[in-house]
Length: 318
Image (tube, rainbow, N blue to C red; front, side, top):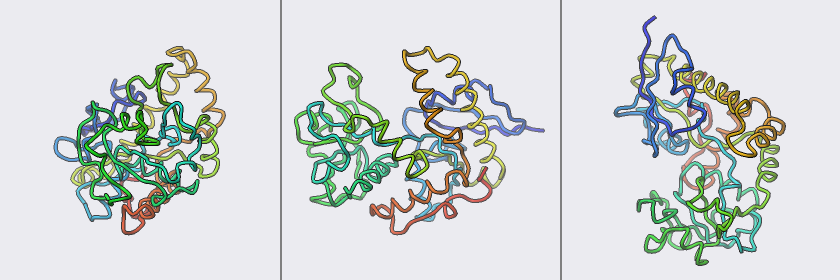
């Protein structure tokens, strides 16, 4: 059987290492993976497939973009309570306490920030209950349009004078900042910042017990041209990613001494979460997908809610 070679762009997720090192086999497919620091947006151009923002994909579907098709393999997942940071001396300690506060976000319709606002809505803080500012996290980040057309004077605005949000947080101009990636210096014992929720692990466990999933931020897309020529490719890419994750998890459990308490985290995750918590496919992720589509609508990002069956064609469902 002749192998099909596809060029794929993803971030440098550690669990993809077996895939990059060709430890995952496929008789039908060979993946040339480019590890990128910033998402390329969607499959297309030099890339046959790509890691893509879940929010951007749903928005593309709502706009009738048929140049890409989605695979329900969520290559980036994560709880969001940990992504809200405040000053170390802040009196705030719970999501519900952000009502009436000034909150910074790194991008208004980013998938992660959408999920974080969803977590706030569960605690009684909706979009209309806070003042929002979109901007760059630090001075090392580029100045770009982070409102993406969703700005509203007096409610959702760009950071004044493009001030980095961590600077504004440090001087008290912001009460909290949403960020998936902690800024330089954050892990220092002398850091002037902390997570808003002191025991965010307990909060995230309670969230999981209620909703039954870890939110998905990024997924896989491939070009419509590739999908038409090789309608099995989406499912095969998904299988290869899943196999890479399984191999890497086994290695992490064996070689846990890469940091002092990795073993503790691995044990807690294995005992507190179901074994299939990262499962790909439509059935395993239907509730999460439907919830996200509704959330985009509730937050005013989409005119209507799109569900799982609207977003994923049968050909790409593993």
